[in-house]
Image (cartoon, rainbow, N blue to C red; front, side, top):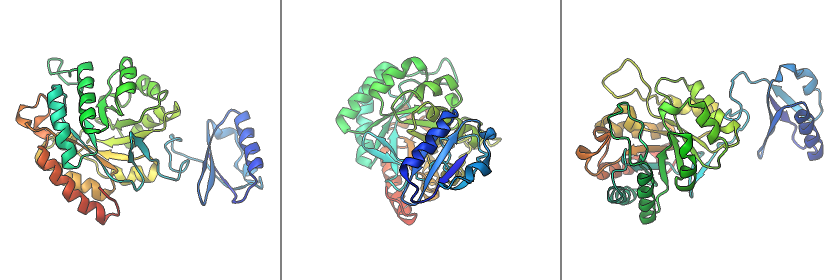
Length: 338
């Protein structure tokens, strides 16, 4: 339920109103801006009488929310959320983030070298997988802690914040200490125990959409994290599984305006996993910028033919730079910067 407070309502009386709802067992999300002041009630509001609430002289409007998500709902939080990742701000009208790096960390020498190339190309953050969820148990599973240490070495040389995928609750302390943006992959989007644990930490989360999940299910997974107290969530569309086999997945760019309308959370697009082919990454990247994406996460490798994983969808550094240069033109058209 959304309760709109009248402009100029006495602050002390509003606090008393909030306390009265809290006494009845509701969590109250108090959101204020230049031209608005709303209270979002979280809990079972079926027992509340809208007319009785609306009769309060402090209140101008009462609206019931049909959507199951509350914390992520734009009606509860009209202003765009901006997530700060070690000085890189994502969301709202901030500069579009360009996250680049290899699918897998293969060695310290490799990730340091590519990190330097990503930064030189104009990238703002470094991605790299240390723990790898693979379809086959026989495929390379990642360097694990050694991979995290290699990423830290790359950050030391370049200053680029680190993005890496967390697979298990037991690794949370390691990621909280060393990783700047914790990625939750498609396969773990509905790992509710993991999501609840992430709600208890103070670290930004990049939540990828599941392989075949609806938009509402995806937002509800973000809600799990936010309900636990961690509201630094960035959504990431990486393509969904459809009947089409020509691409690795089907990139759903329509989610960008939908997420912007329904939620206040930033959204990043992953054109690499969506297409599965480096040739199509540029087109989808530019389209994503035009559609309003707050960032792109792109796989970059200086020797894709020798990559330990996902070489077919990885860009060479010079191609990554080309996308950034073209992306700046597109961003300018839609009132953003890159």
